[in-house]
Image 1 (cartoon, rainbow, N blue to C red):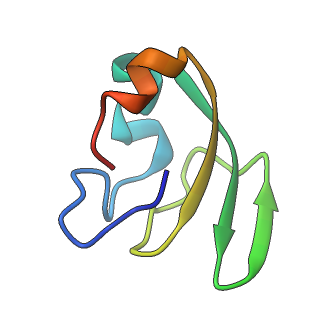
Image 2 (cartoon, rainbow, N blue to C red):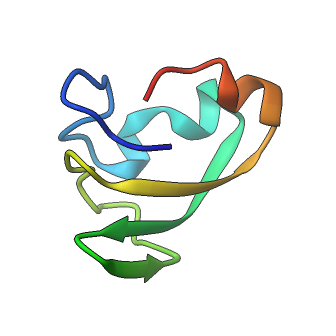
Length: 66
């Protein structure tokens, strides 16, 4: 998933984003400005351009707009 300008996840902490509940997924990594953050802290704020690595229910994850 890539966080875009209009994303409902933009500016939210991972733990407050609802990704786990709505997409049945876990954020296992973030790529930000060429740097990889593995097992990011749940307090990490999601920023525009972040590429999130998720594991979980593929159908539910794909059905959400990031």
